Image: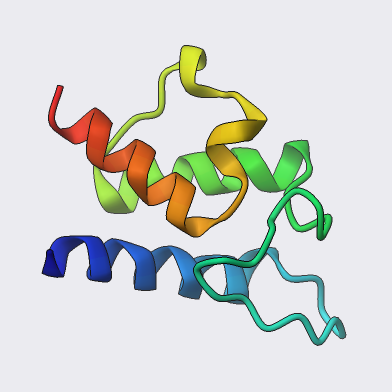
Length: 86
């Protein structure tokens, strides 16, 4: 369970520090709607995928690149955990 909490926190921190535009006062948490809020566009999604692959150690296959899998951090963590167990 701690791994889920750790991955969640690492993703929240990464998104807050790297994907929230400068001057924007969005406070990211695990339920922030990433697509609806405009935080994820194609470039930011690529940066997020690189972070997940490099820092969390889980490559995301093209078949999982569905907007439903990137609604919020909770959804991303669920997908990452599923891929880890494969």
